[in-house]
Structure formats: structure tokens, C-alpha cells
Image (cartoon, rainbow, N blue to C red):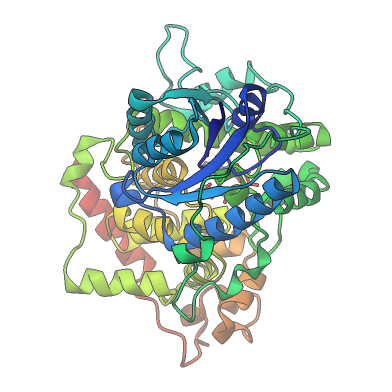
Length: 454
Ligand code: FAD
């Protein structure tokens, strides 16, 4: 009998344990199901859909090259899989286990109807498996990483299967174009051309990064240079496994350990959402429910200005425009823009989480929520709310002039000193907005608001 291979965020052929197991188990029917019902309020955002379209296109071509196919279906995962099993006589479903709460629910629903074989393969270690001495899950990153490291390196990546056994008859498939995953907004996704979704593109990035991985720690905080790997969307969609990234870079020397510890953050985020499934929508610290976030018309207008990159803070505006144009933002600038929304504008972090969810090509339920709650101080780790980042100091310290010139062309003519704070330097061009709120005033307002959480 054929077996079904259920793809989700694991769109690769190499180091794909569900594929390897399926190949041993019978003719393989690979399927991707577009299931917008399962995640409800966290259905895939616009930028992720763009990525998904191209990644599926690439996966389908790779499967075809191996004598196989990618079947596309749309609907509730459990219902679609049950129907597909009935049509094809498939007895079993192989998949890589996923940790978003909705995937746990979907897996349970599938397992009621069919034999479901879940495999590990997207993280350095299975989420939930790294525990304290007394067997409890970790809440804080540093001890988590210390414990995870004891289990490293991860197992050697599996090679691509030599051949993928095909069924004698193929079931029908949707056409990718009919899913309308590509954007219709005319001014959007124009800058996405820098990406090559799919397994081949992922390995190209990884190979390129491996050549400067030794300088990671020195370069990663400077948005004007390409110091980090830009692997996040590839890792999110599973075009590359964390183990592959580890093995390709771990021997690079220099400061590559810092890079490996960032892969650890990715694992950590999954461990957090396993313990707190509602992490993207609820404060982990309940006292934050009392924080008087700004709401109403003025706050709404401020939120829009932040989204559009018109706050009058060049580093913030550069980041928000990079996000809109390319679907990605430099990590240092993500921290600055998130902190600005939460503390300078006193707008609920969940508004930011939603915007990033829609705009990031690497939008990831766990990583996004963990980083937003970390910035807000409402999360399971330390309360950072009162550590208020000064965006202009950050901009100078991390030498963002080149980055600002690239993303905020109105300011391109300003010199390296004036460009961080054109208001202060008295040379703000007419077409660039004044600062929405002064740093000191914003800081005082935020600290006052924070008292309500005491
Ligand atoms: P590198 O620096 O090369 O790091 C390698 C990999 O490690 C990344 O690809 C990523 O998979 C992982 N990683 C690095 N930093 C983190 C981190 N802080 N938390 C979790 N994983 C990390 N990352 C996402 O993948 N998806 C998100 O939705 C997301 N939302 C974020 C929201 C905010 C407010 C902030 C401050 C950070 C967010 N991050 C998110 C984390 C981080 O900014 C990105 O992973 C990183 O910028 C991606 O670029 P890179 O691949 O060059 O990273």
C-alpha cells in the first residue's frame, strides 16, 4: 500500500526523516495541505504566503526530478488526509512533528482516523526533551542553552533519498496558481527578489554564510553590513534543518559559537510555546494585563506611522521600510523598532506581533512571540520593560548611517553624524517627518505606565 508524506514547514528532501521513513515504507504520496482553518487567528501572513508559493514550486520541481510529485490540497488537515487515504488506499501518514499549538491539535485529529507516524527533524533537540535536573522544562534561555549544548552536536544529517518510490496511480492535485498566495497589493513584495525560496536557495545561503561564520559575533549587530546568515525564512519553512546549519558551520572557528547559540534561541522558543501555547496572544506575566496601553484614535495613527516607517526616528523608519520592502529586518533593528512601539508609543506588543506576523517572510509563531514578550518584559524570562532602549544612541553605536541611507532615501544626503537625528542636527528635510515624541518624554511616560504593573 502507498503511504502519505505530509509536508508542512519541512519543505526539503535532504535530512527529512519523514521522507526517509516513508521511502522505506511503500510508494510515497507527498502532499501539502493549505489549512487556514487550523491556526485560526494565526493563519499564515502575507509575506509568508509569498514565500510558501515559491517554496512549494521549488519542492514540486525537486520531487519531479526524483520521479515523484507534490499533491496540493486545501482544507482541514485531518479531513483532507482521511479523504486522500481513502482515494489512494494509503495506510499510513508520515510527518515531521510541529509544535505550534494548532498543529498539535491537527495531529491528534489525524491520529484518530489514520496511523500517524511523527518524526523529529526541525530542531536541534526535540522540544520538551531538554529539562532541568528535576525533569522540569526550562523557562529561561541561558540554562536551557547550557543544557542543550550537552546534547550537541546533533545527529549527522540524512542524505537525500536515492529514489522516491512512486504509486502506480497519482491522486488529483490543486494547481498552485489557484491558491492565490502571491500578493495583489501593487507596492508590496517588490524587494523580495533578493530571496530564493526552496532547498537549493537555502543551501546557497548557508554556503555563503559559512565563509564568514567565523566573524559572526563581530558583524551581526551592524545593520549596514550583511553579517548574519539570513537563513531565518529557510529555517522557518524547513528548507534547511537546524542540524544541517550546525554541521556546516560549527567548525568555522572564530565566533561561530555565538551563531550556534542563536540556533539555540530558535529551539528555546519552541520550548516556550510548548509550555505556554497562547504565548502570542497573552502576557505571560499577568500583572502586565494592568499596563495602560494607549488605545483610541491617536494611538491608531501612531501605530500606522510606525508601520509605514514615518516616526521621525531614522533607525526605526529604516527598519520598518526594510521589513515592508523585503519581508525581513535586521535583528538589532527588530529590537529597536519593537522597543519603540512598546515603550515610546506605549502600544500593546500584540499589535507589533501581528504586524510582524503579516510582513515577515520568517514569521514564526514561537520566535516572534518569544521576542516580542522578551522586549515587552511581559514574558517568562526577566522583566525588561524598564530597560528602555534609546533608538538614537543605538543607531550611532551600531553605525547605521549606511543602512538609513539605503532605506530612508529622503535622508540620503545627510552626513554620518546628522543622519541619526536630523531634528536635533537642524537639517531635517521637508519630506521627512519630525519625531513623533521626544525620547525623554516617551521614557517618562513609559516608566509611569510601568508602575501600574507593580
Ligand atoms: P542569524 O543571526 O544568522 O541567526 C541564525 C538563526 O538563528 C536565525 O535564522 C534564526 O532561525 C535563529 N535566531 C536568531 N536569533 C533568534 C532569536 N532572537 N529568536 C529565535 N531564533 C533566533 N525570528 C524568526 O525566525 N521569526 C520571527 O518571527 C522573529 N520575530 C522576531 C521579532 C522580534 C521583535 C525580534 C526582536 C526578533 C525576532 N526574530 C524572529 C529573531 C531574529 O531577529 C531573527 O531570527 C533573525 O534576525 C533572522 O536573521 P538571520 O537568519 O540572519 O539570523
